[in-house]
Length: 160
Image (tube, rainbow, N blue to C red; front, side, top):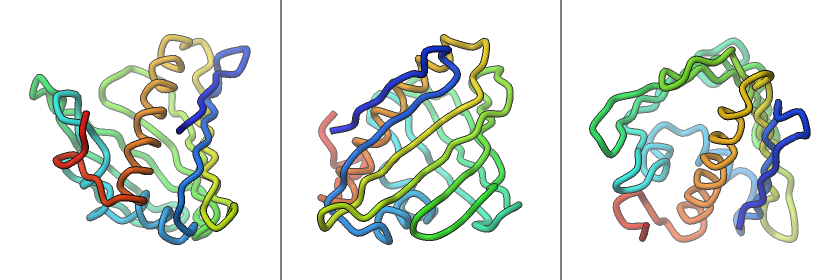
């Protein structure tokens, strides 16, 4: 189960989840294009259909997807720090919302035979509605990733 919060100034989303798999496995789930497209999304909501990346500091990444209504979107950014399997920091620029560039930080820590995932998404200053929407989105994303890593559940096989 993911826990998610917003900073008092609503600039930063923080989230945590414990996953029963080693950090290497979790890191692969969030960086391997073949894996990301299997778990990131939900039937009748939205899903990622394509993911490409150059996994190195300064390298670019881009995801493409579609909503339940068939509308196409993308999110892209640049990797700031890449330290497998402990840390991944990248910028976040979505096509679905007009926002300043924000930053996503994934911290993976070994925890009781599994991984504690700490996610921080910052830079929403002045866009409280976007921060709230992203906090709800990250809650879903972390649970989807957990189901994929622990049980192999995909967008197609996971119950809504």
